[in-house]
Length: 86
Image (cartoon, rainbow, N blue to C red; front, side):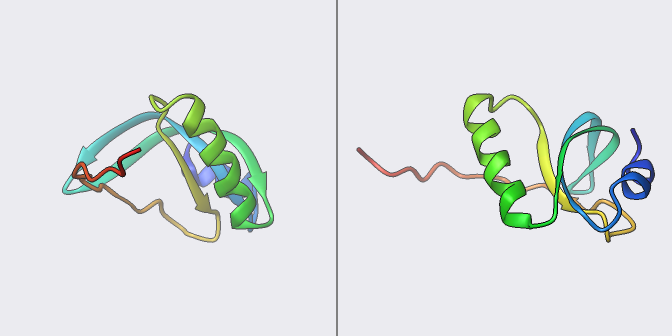
């Protein structure tokens, strides 16, 4: 599904989606095809489900985004390994 299609189906909602086809360009993730996992009224509900699913499978490229946005803007972040001991 394209972002435009998701916006027309899930009007004014938070959605949790998985990137099916995506690539990196100029520090951004460009999602060409996505699969909606669920939709929500509240962002905190979406983030909670994202955290649960991400904990189970970190290999999936999932995002939470609101359909009020005309375009997806996903900035890539480079994580440097600072971890809590114990």
